[in-house]
Amino acid sequence: MYTQCKMCGGKYLPPQVDCPKCKTSDVEWREVGAEGELITWTVIYAKSAGFSHHGDYVVGIVKMPDGFNVTASIDADPKALKPGMKVRLVVDR
Ligand SMILES: [Zn+2]
Image (tube, rainbow, N blue to C red; front, top):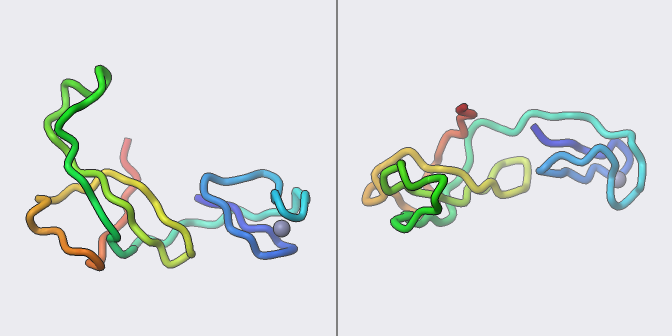
């Protein structure tokens, strides 16, 4: 979810309860689109202590249709990834 200011239309992710430009609390919650475009990615080999039990994993930056980028884990073989390919955003616990 992100917030959008009803006065200026500014979009914020992470969400903001007040618009930093207008200083208004008149914002609405909106759902991030499900599909975006992969900009870039990297494979994480060296992990922090909290992630040491995970295998190597891929993190990418995805351009969303709402106008902002999302950094997220990419559940795919990095050899199959290509810049600009469509990826689906899934919220996971
Ligand atoms: Zn605003």
